[in-house]
Image (spheres, rainbow, N blue to C red):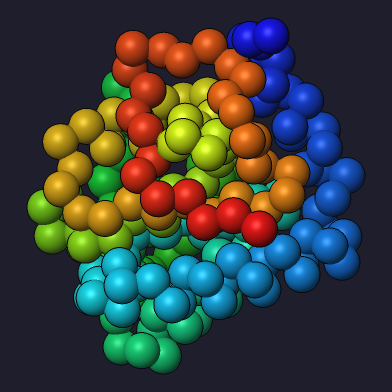
Length: 183
């Protein structure tokens, strides 16, 4: 039975909130990090786009630290008016604050990267299907950004986020995720 994205999103967010400080979540994350770091996409990428995670998301701090240790360049999203988004170079001198949606993002001054220069984008979400369908947080920022994106795209799906079959209605503007690493 197909459900609305909003219904699934709400159910997922409740489940993810309950699992925030759960050992199983941390264990899943360690497995997902290992899988990510073994991919050719990770090994070949010099410029990586990734969010600064919230508590209910897959923790991205270890990924960011690993990228920096490997001398990769890390870029984090900055939302703009009209549901647009750019990626900003994460440097030690950059200021990061919560926006009006509660998301940690850079404040000016900052340096952006052209979309075509990002080689790997690690996509956040609350649900992913085996076939590459995704439910994000409802703003459509990533679907818009992924339109005409030429770099590699990977999502990390722990046990809660992974669906064997898509259980939600697919919208015309949804962009499939080509590679989903799961448990």
